[in-house]
Length: 71
Image 1 (tube, rainbow, N blue to C red):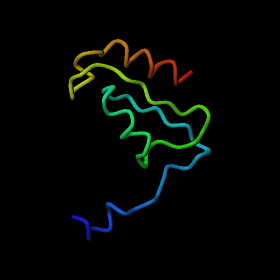
Image 2 (cartoon, one colour; image 1 turned 120 degrees about the vertical axis):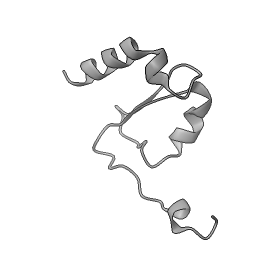
Image 3 (cartoon, helix red, strand yellow; image 1 turned 45 degrees about the horizontal axis):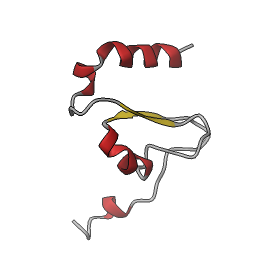
Image 4 (cartoon, helix red, strand yellow; image 1 turned 30 degrees about the vertical axis):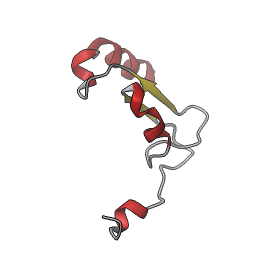
């Protein structure tokens, strides 16, 4: 896998577009380095739950976040 160009890709999401990542707390530092997180001041990583399928644990909280983003 080390020779796979994908793992060396340095592309990031454009900083002019805020990103919101909802993930398990233990994965926060991983997502801080990911291509989906950027330096926009409104970007955030929201830790929730301990289960891979966070949407099953916190469906109402996630829908509240999505609704607030659409306003």
